[in-house]
Amino acid sequence: MSIEFVRRLDGLVYRFRRDGTFNGRPSFKRLDLELWCRWLPERGWCTVGADGVANSWPLSGRTGQEMFPPLGPWRSWKAGKSYLYDLRRIDEAGGEADAPSSGPVQRDHLT
Image (cartoon, rainbow, N blue to C red):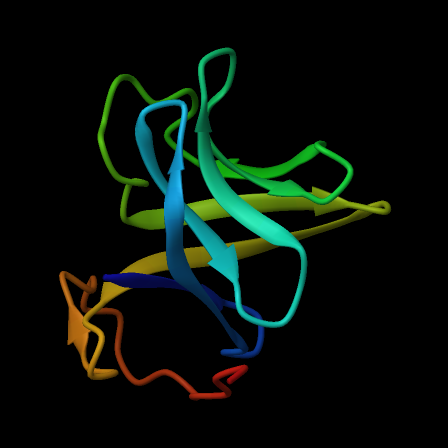
């Protein structure tokens, strides 16, 4: 299983592939950058840069004990900019699975 974050502003897609485990849950690494989607005990699910700083979270706030990052809207915050993304799960063949139906999305996969 892979995940992708689709930026609502312009449809830009950032893809993450499963990359082992972290804190007993799946860890996902962005394909083009040292950025992970991970579960941290003190924060819940978030994205974390190479510097260890969390920079995006689900809009629902702190997530409980889910085994996978929650689908739906996430807010990023880095270098004074904030964007809204939709998290989707995709299968390894590249098709969508468990994706919220929000209409057509521009595909700009970073592979």
